[in-house]
Length: 450
Image 1 (spheres, helix red, strand yellow):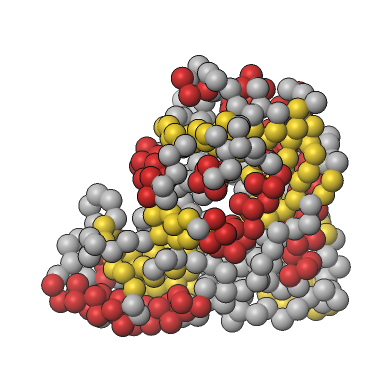
Image 2 (cartoon, rainbow, N blue to C red):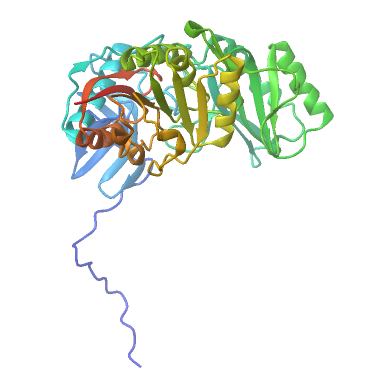
């Protein structure tokens, strides 16, 4: 048997592999431009660096968060040469908390960035530009968020409870007792929440906490073990002090401690009250949500004799205002519990010209009974994956007008290709500033049949 040869190193056929950059390494960089997610882009020694907290034209020191091949993710540690656009971050937790990634940009520049992102996706992917750009729908840049999920984790080694928001680029928890983007009614709850949770007897059994401010204030606690009577009393006293409902999420669905309490939100311009339960999808920015619904109705221009389809209807956020203007609304949603909740919302608001159905909208529209009569207009508000299978069949429904509300410009652009192929024209488009201080882009587009 031949003796193995030791000490020889063979080079892979593709040539030598560049040494990987270690996490934590600091590097001085010149930022060339901004990426679509608001991070700065720099180029060094054949690698592309994406640097959180950096602006175009700046010279910064960046700390490596991770590296994959020729792509390096990093965050700004120090700014040597600042852009004229840079402003002091309004939040004390900037750069550590992962929630607000572009607060070093003035709000008008944030809007301009989002507008460029939407225009670039429509142009590059779909090869189109709307016949008219709509002004951004925007509201206050702080104090807008009416719902928040607070991370809670027991650190067994340090024997302490961590309460706050997830850190940028990791699963670490940043201790936070103040958040400038939360609506004012949630601020005192956020500030006192960590101290209250630390008094509970089984901190290792706690999950997350969800805060909501609508027609009432609510605090939901996720727990993985039964709560003791003493712990329940601590929670109830805390919520009573803040005039908040207490919801618990153990096994099964979230439940209010007081079953007689109602939770929801109002759409004031239409005098509508929508019931909501923790875990349901709801737009976190109440002011921009109302402006969005109003703009969707204006663009769709529903007529009293029309039948309108609302896809991905959720709790009825669009369907109920639409029902006040048309002969019939058919609303479809993938989650059965949301369908039931939306139907209850219609009934409680005395709207009887609405019908709600459950269907898997990630699949092609089948010959469902509700689709056979056709529709004059369609509104859809899909998740980030978009609605490709749905839009492939929209022309067959006979709709002349279509409003597409998007939370992802990339899938909106992809679906626009298909709509244009079916003979629709992109008449209008614009951004919805649902999440100020972040690079997240929501948009609305109006399509009309040629």
